[in-house]
Image 1 (cartoon, rainbow, N blue to C red):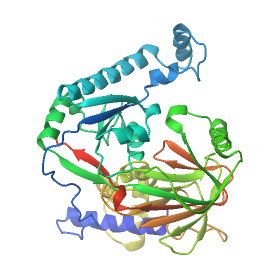
Image 2: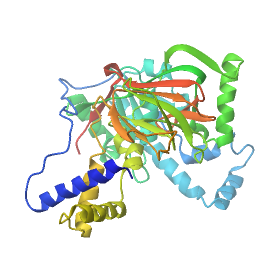
Image 3: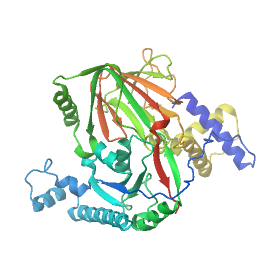
Image 4: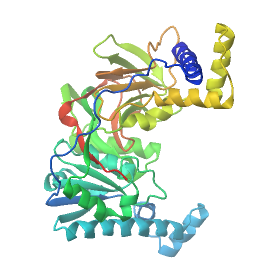
Length: 422
């Protein structure tokens, strides 16, 4: 834990003491922007693409993984792995029934519908549709959002298996079964737009493979992942590596986060980083995460959050060093922990990036001047052996020695989503 973390916790402890004693401490930073705006009229698209997830049942059935297996063989193999065939089929049927419910509801309103599996989803589908519905969980929503490059095209997430999926980016779970009600509210204008800021990526230098590998669809091993990058590069160019003399904008946007690091997690990631055009700094760490306000509730949150045990130990040190009368009851520790962790979350419409260095190595060669901070632009130069740049946990780009990524935001990259109250 850094000195700044210790100081922050002691400060939070003091704030919590003030709360207990009825005083009004200075508030933590919050975004002053309104997270949404009221639409002027109802929204009823003429053409809607419904992009559906690949269920675990479908994935297990795919022949590239279990070539030649009968259904009975598949049942036995799943049983050996401790998985339930009937359970997977049940969840698949729940998802399928909810997708059919969405499609029928749309068609009853006279809306033209096109159902697309996530593996078939691309720019042609995006161009065709007036709006896109993600039918799955957060992973499907992230994939759908990544390929929508216009801020004028609404994206709506529907959680098709609420009992097994969090669906933080989707409509409230009651609308999974009550989708006609949600549709009526959209048509009447009884909702609010939520503009979520997204990340854009420019690549330049050497060691680059601009062809992505879909991690969700393929579920690759480390060796297969590396081989897939090499194959896609060879297929496109006939050479193993490409070189871009000028920054090239990738046709993908990140709603949650970008992660850069070695594919083998036990290997330290070596790179150079520049924040807001500042000096380059050599770093070694377990990788680098750069997130949006939407992503501040996801992986970034879990990278940076503290547990009550750590908070208690730090406050004990703070109490002994400062002489402050800091109570150390379980309730107080919980309040301080919650307040610290809440400070890690910021608004989805915030135009700042939050970068986090995972487990930085600090010695006479490598430094980490700031383990976490806000920025408008972050540049990263890879010095890695077998690294990748992963967008929203699902799309991987090769990112080896000599590759440079510029991570930034633009107002034109906002994602148009909706807020429906329960």
